[in-house]
Length: 318
Image 1: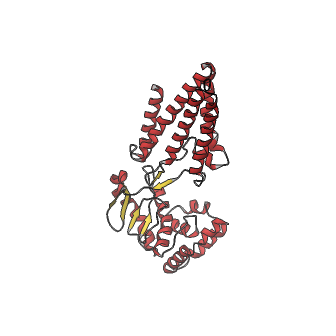
Image 2: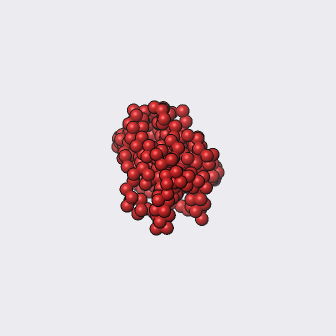
Image 3: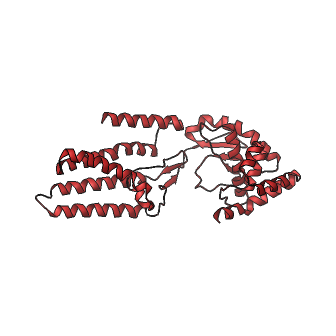
C-alpha cells in the first residue's frame, strides 16, 4: 500500500510538472481513480483468496486485473474499453473528462466484487453462484449501454467559467491557471498578427484558448498554447487560427483541417519556406507560388474566399 501511495504522489507531481498546475476539479476525480480502482481490485483479490488457495488466488487476480485493464482498449469494439477504467486520454485545461468516465469503471469493479462476495456464500446457498453470474452480466451490459455512443474516445465536456482575459486588440483569454502567462503570450503573438493584418487578414479582437467543441465567435481566433510551446509553434498555430477566425467572421464553421489557405498564412507569418514546402504537395505549392505573385489585396480576397469555401473539408472527407 505504501508503494501504491508513493506512485500516486509521483503521478500527481508529474501532472504538475507537465501542465504547470496541481490537479483540481475534474483532476481530483483522476486522483481518486488511482485510489478507488486498485482498492476495488484489492477487495476482489481478498474474496478470491477466500474461495481458493491463496497461492492460486494471488497470481490469478494479478493476471486477471491486468488483462481486464489491457485487453479491452485493444479490442475493435470501442464500448468495452471504457468499462475497465484504463483511461488513455485525460482532461485538459479546456476539455474535461465526463465524470462517468471514472464512475462507470468504479461501478463495474464494485459489481465484480459484489458478485464474488455472493459466490463466496455458495457453499450454503448454491443459488448464489447464479446470482453472482447474473450480477456480472448485468453490470457489464448496463455499463456498456451507458458508453455505447462514446466511440473510441472517452466522453468529454467543454470547460467553462475558468477564463481570464488580458489586454485589448487583441485580448488574450486563457484558463485561469495560465493567467500569469497571458501578457507574454500577447506580446509574442503581435508580430505574427501584424504580419497577417498587413496582408489583409482581419485583425482578431480576441485570442481565446478554449475547447474546440465551443463555437468560435466572430472576431475571435482560437489560441493553442502550453508552457512548452515555442515561438515558432505559436506562429504556426496562429496562422492556422487565422483560417478558423476568418471563417467565423463570415458565419462559416471551419472544419480545422489542413488547407492551402493555412499554408499561405504560414508563409505570411514567417515560417521557414523550405519547411512549409516539405509539408505541401507539389501541385499546391505551385498554386501558392502563383498566388503570392498577386497584389496583396488580391491575395487577401483569395484567402477570404478560400476560407469561406471550405473545400479542404470536403477533400478531407473523401
